[in-house]
Image: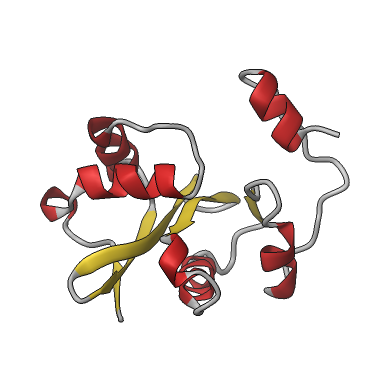
Length: 139
């Protein structure tokens, strides 16, 4: 397994990454939109096995106070093998010193983050983009 931090993004297989989003049940994302979002990220972590991307995650932040982990995705064939833990811990390590490091867990993935020491917030809010997002993320 290879861990890449802030790799050169012009060489990535954005079509494959789009497929990974769909394999884990997330909305369809266009390869060019994925590339654009990754280019604007502060930290990108990509995990490869046999030169194929099997997981990734990234951060969005203001450089000092607030940071957000986003798009933590692991190919279903590699779940429960430590790949997600490597991604989250690697990204979190790069954010030491921030006042707030947050994330929004995918539905039914809360336990994964809790095992890594993440705590549920009392006052996090979202403006849902549609009914599905409302159903998945709102109380």
